Image 1 (tube, one colour):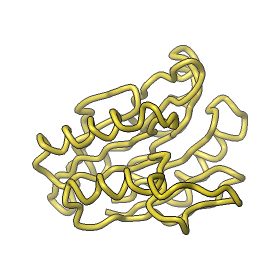
Image 2 (image 1 turned 180 degrees about the vertical axis):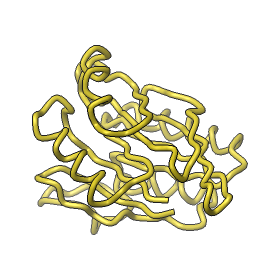
Image 3 (image 1 turned 135 degrees about the vertical axis):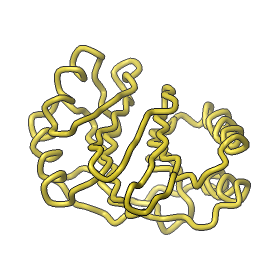
Length: 193
């Protein structure tokens, strides 16, 4: 199963539809998460059906920031939405070929420092009720180590603690980092499960 995460920083931009169609054609994802849609319900309902997937769902942006959408085809997977939250969409994905169920969550995390602890506490709580393999597709707005830092800005060591504490607390078997896909200047990653 191939999952792509694409941070578009505004889904209304003209090139975004072309990028999504390009990703769909060249990488053939089963699931595609669009992060930072930054549009209201009316606009997202106009845009998503034109992206060439059988199914889609979304979480509206708040104050014209954030926003999250997921698109998928049911060719080799069956993927009902389990729950939608302001910052996440959770799906139960059944891979027909591998005969395997996985919880897949697309996440666009809070960027403001003052709200991050409650966000991570919520995900720790979710982990206590999930009894299947759980794949978090992300923009966590967190860094796991200093080598991920871009630019000259220095961060305190606490900047790297939240994500690492979370993965340690849930006994994550591995942390998969997606393969970067370069589409214009946006951040896109492909994950194979």
